[in-house]
Length: 201
Length: 201
DNA sequence: ATAGAAAACGGACCGCGGTCCGTTTCCACC
DNA sequence: GGTGGAAACGGACCGCGGTCCGTTTTCTAT
Picture 1 (cartoon, each protein chain N blue to C red):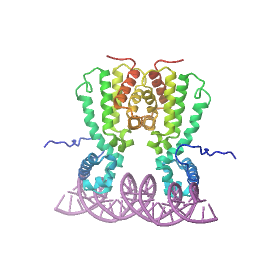
Picture 2 (spheres, chains in turn cyan, green, purple, orange; picture 1 turned 45 degrees about the horizontal axis):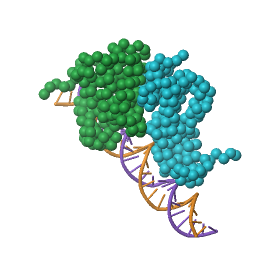
Picture 3 (spheres, rainbow over the protein chains, first blue to last red; picture 1 turned 90 degrees about the horizontal axis):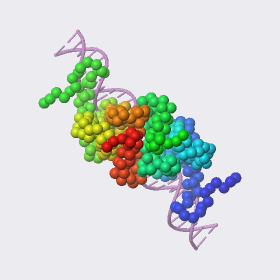
Picture 4 (cartoon, chains in turn blue, cyan, red, brown; picture 1 turned 90 degrees about the vertical axis):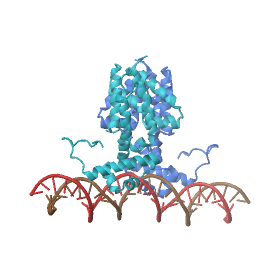
């Protein structure tokens, strides 16, 4: 088999003890399984601990909180999505004009968010705050805006594009106001157009 | 003293029994007091029940959940703010050009949101979903956009303006990214300008 | 190999949000 | 004023997230 362990190259915090690493693996696996089967909000930490065959304390030492554990599970899904953006086929991946990439990003991101809605909700603050997933998304939008020649406060403008795709807002639009999905999609593209300033094809 | 009870005019669901109304009053009062003193997240439902001199079950029958109770407390503060918008002095209140009103709205709303941040967080979904407060805010923005002659999907555009003022986004910008408040304010005005389309003074 | 210390383990324990149900209070109608 | 029944009450109870600390495992230095 291949050597999948990250080589213990120097630097960074001291490495993890073997039992700790093994338990982290088991816990993540168990959590993924349970989340897929029952939905994130129905999964209890005791159940994860039991399914992984470890004590409850271990779960919290490894992941800090339920939000932390769910964020870890989410991060795994997000990583696959990220690779689509970084090295997948256009227009989501590189190779298409930046405006087309931005539109493709919006659509894909919206669908992904709605797909993992319960997981994102369960991940709570840990989902965005300092999570690698969020940083990547924000960076990508800033990058596309820059490529489009947008001037202004790019971090803030990127936030303006991402905020309407947060779960609470989508919940409101889709489940309370009853807007059909195409309308939300179209609305986002319109917003992007106004922010970028009459671009494109 | 004045007659503050809403007159039992016909229509709507059957009125509330006297003890029920009295307890709702006591509970809201106690909750306000405790929230102001200790912060919403530190207030327990048992504490509210005890402070109001009622049983715990009563709290939940009246307000459904902690989020519900906090939303009720929040609604009280929001009502005062609403009256400023509807009948206060310009530019927040009526009488100023719509663009000035929109800018004033943004600033005021942002400050209010940050001021009640913990309460809003504790109110959770109940804060926005179908709360009177949220509906009013959304309606007001739609109204101003219409007055400015903005064309397009106004409900969606209003959401785009309100989403960056939600607590999770502000938390990210202010407490994680460390943006100074003026930058967030300015960013919002810039966003509004782009959405409206080169307006104004 | 072995010893000693540091790190991880596990499950009893705690506090809080939320529910349940036997008891009490109110109110409409006689 | 009395009375029947619906509505409200209250606090014991439950499940879950999170903590604590005595025990066990792993690593390192000899």
